[in-house]
Length: 287
Image (cartoon, rainbow, N blue to C red; front, top):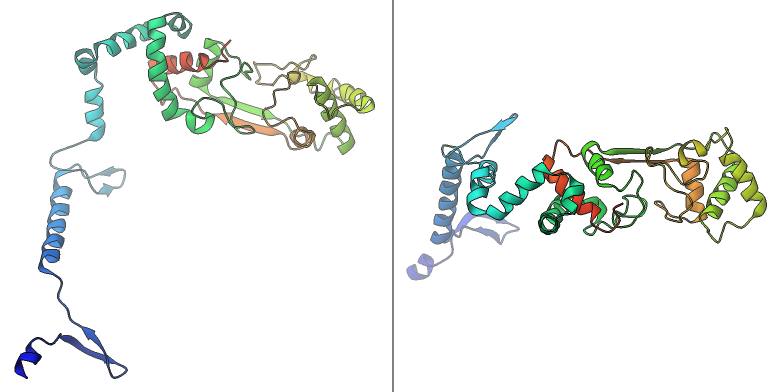
């Protein structure tokens, strides 16, 4: 009897509904020691390494360890020269050359294509896609020959440095629904769209396009071939940023459009901007 009581499972003494008891099973000894070890490890880590945020800073740790400092050390001029002499020489050449001149150097372009792919993937692909194909209605295709702000090396470099702010005003307060449909039909006819075949609407839309009421010509030009200084697209080439369906063109006229390309001059070095300029130009659509 005494032996059975000795091996009986202990309880906390709490009982519910007469027979529902709470067991008091101790944790396995190894589990307890592992838990204590993790606590000790955490305390030691807090002391040795950066750990706790403190306003705009953080605790440095007695080892003063910094991943950023390690990265800067790994990419320092001395390290590059010693461990990556070819990369060091290429970057030195790029620093002294224009993107257009870089594009003419076959060896440098091999370096640009490898380094530029990494830079593009880290900084540009989230919007423009891994291959620069863009997203219709959101981000332009960088691999075709249609450029809103120009596709020369100089134009691309300026876009990277300063960014771009595109704006197409809404016309819902300037034109009636019938007039908006007429302008859309005229623009669709310029691009050769099948849905734009009403001669009367085309004639009316042309008059509005070139008139002072809508003044579309002021940005897109008398020939509707756009203005790269303003980022106004060519309306005659059937390349549509937001889509060329009748409903989409009407929506653009009614609501207007607005887009922004951020500036990268404070995020990338001059050499990185040159590399990206040459890389984007070489994607297939550079002028």
